[in-house]
Length: 220
Ligand code: ADP
Image (cartoon, rainbow, N blue to C red; front, side, top):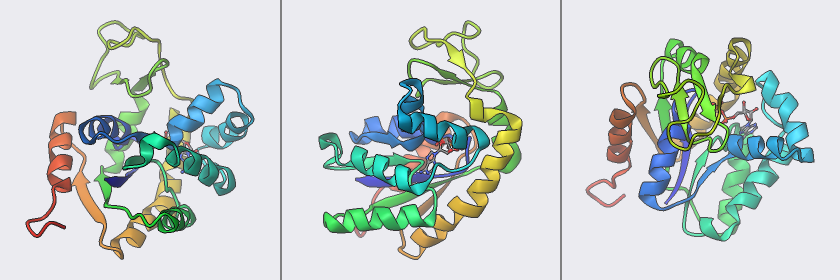
């Protein structure tokens, strides 16, 4: 399956993606994680991306599209992938279409996670992430680690992302509305969008997501 995950920052894309990727045996490709890996390895791409990310802006398409393409061309993505954070604007969506078309491939679904804005701000303000594995995500109120500052799963250090500050979150939401939301309309025109209300527990959302991805009776 080839799936694109969209939703505002804090919608729980990473959390759901980790589960879905495992369940569907496809790689989870997160452009945010790829940029963060480049930042921690201090590559030129990481240095370039950091200034945009810290400001809450999109990293320029010229480098983002190339990075996403390189990752999608790895052998583990041959039979499918789950894209998280890409595409994030209409020109990236067009570039993805072009890439898929040239390989005679197509997307199976675009999963749109809907969350009210106040909820997003609350989720992000308390979010803490493991330095060793960014799929280990905690929250100071909703999903506290047993020991403050330490990941329950692997003992890694928990930290707050630089772009999770309140001021940056506002910009990220704005960028989401102006640049990313239009891709939902783009994909709606292709009949690919499945919308899921991403509120409630993580398990509730996972159940809804799996239900939404089930093929229709007529096999579509
Ligand atoms: P979130 O979904 O919580 O906003 P991500 O980890 O997906 O977080 O992305 C963090 C930041 O990385 C974005 O705010 C942006 O600066 C950059 N980024 C990630 N994916 C893309 C993309 N496809 N195009 C441009 N910038 C991106």
